[in-house]
Amino acid sequence: MRDDALIEVQDLVMYFPVLAGVARRRVADVKAVDGVSFYIKKGETLGLVGESGCGKTTTGRCILQLYDITGGHVFFEGKDLTTYRGTSLRQMRRHMQLIFQDPYASLNPRMTAGDIIGEPLLVHKLVKGKEYEEQVAELFKMVELEPRMAVRYPHEFSGGQRQRIGIARALSVRPSFIVCDEPVSALDVSIQAQVIMLLMRLREELDLTYLFIAHDLSVVRHISDRVAVMYLGKIMEITHSDELYDNPLHPYTQALLSAVPIPDPVVDRQRKRILLSGDVPSPVNPPSGCHFHPRCQMAIDVCREQEPELKDIGGEHWVSCHRV
Amino acid sequence: MDKGESVGLVGESACGKSVSALSVLRLIPYPPGIIVGGEIIFKGHDLLKASEEEMRHIRGNEITMVFQEPTTSLNPVLSVSRQLSEALELHRGLDSEASNQEAVRLLKLVGIPDAENRVHDYPYQFSGGMQQRIMIAMALSCNPSLLIADEPTTSVDVTVQAQLLEIIDNLRTQFGTSVIVITHNLGIVARYVDRVNVMYAGRLVETGPTEVIYGQPRHPYTIGLLASVPRLDLPRHRQLSVIPGLPPNLARLPKGCHFQVRCKYAIDRCSEEKPALEQVGENHYAACFRTGEMEELVRAENEG
Image (cartoon, rainbow over all chains, first blue to last red; front, side, top):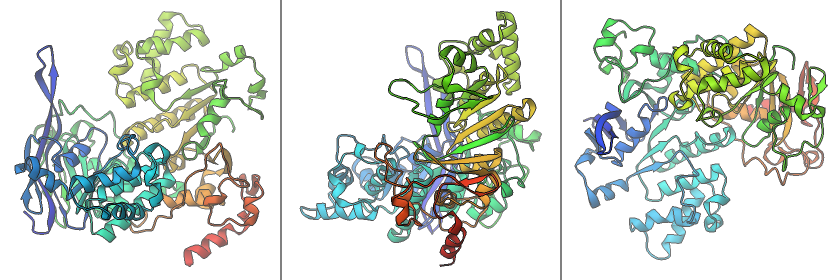
């Protein structure tokens, strides 16, 4: 355990069974998360990037104990969340909240915006009587919405405004840790910047710790202090955000970075390009050894046979590759 | 656009970029959609005056389109070979054997491994990236003069996105096909196109060569859009400049310039008159009254 860690994940494993036949027999496992360890310090933002199906969303949900995890431990303020059940778990969850990707699917269309934001206050019995409305109005202002909009229904808001409602709902119980699961991916470019700036301001004002999950490397790097790169249920590299761009060591990180075009043709044309071949393999049957070896240009025999460990190479830079 | 040129059409959702592309192919559902005016000149002929039969000859043959979502654009109950050979038999008059061989060749061209066997598979047996390759193969099957790619990479991962864009770019240089790329991703456009058109609320607000649009943008919307995206190559703590507010409702557009309500450089004239596209440089046009002072305005703001 690190002393300064708010969240510490140790060897997290999450398998989902694949059922088949009339008897719904378990024939295989989707190895969504396969031995992931990291920590998030208090007040820090850890970015989690990777392509679809790499297990980044599952990791976020496992931290909040929304799944019954297959193995490993999740510590929050030094307490092992995997030992909590029922009421005590619900009480712990007050301190950890989730902001969802899809602002259309994550708000109940039959509840007003005010009720959506206020519901957690009532569930956790945080307010009495008149305080309720004051608190809800306060939350609206916090995310730059007008309190008079509380009577409206979700369909009357734009995508960006809905995402603000989702953020206000997460903030209502005064959490210390928030999992932001692709909070800007569904939004337009000009609205993305608004929500990113809002999240960064709230982090300062409310002293929040974020796990920021996204597939857009430039967004993740902008908001995060450190970034973890995931591939097929494993962490390939964790390092400081600046180091990630200046000195990426894992071949997958390098390929991922080079695949992101930079909106400046002069700069972009000078960059080295690494084009990966093929698709991400299925997590039901991941490749032997290093999961990345079939697409890796640097792969040697040992990569096919032996799984590399996540090694600390100094300065909080961890890499999982035999060839580093 | 010229032969062999690639042009980008950028803008946020509902700015009219897809509708512009669908209009070129006259695929706007009618009713309710009506093309009210204008001309679409393709190889010297106005497509809006063409008969439906002539259009059928052009669609999928001379002008083809790659749609945003391969999963919904491919027919789930027909095998890939059947879907590819449809256009080959219709436009190129191949018999079923020849069209099957041609389908295999096309799949190889877009980099689908084991094409001989996989050509008989159904769309669901392919991943999203592979499905989009099939869409590209289909679009190229009749050697089109113009390929319109409508958000070709929005539903795929970033490493697959790079693969797909390389394929389209290689085919352009190889066969001299003109390409229109429609996207909201400013990065894609910077990397792959010669010219950029920026749209906002149904109008073209700026157009010019790629280097100029990214180097010396003159329209406040383009400037704001470029400053609002986080960039990998710039310092991390750079403040993102935010364009306040929302794009307008297209049924209730503001008077004057459509961008005026969100524009920090708006003056009185902007709310009364609609600015026209005016030349501001070589092949560079912008629809704004203040293009002349824009450089100074931006500099003053960055310093202040």
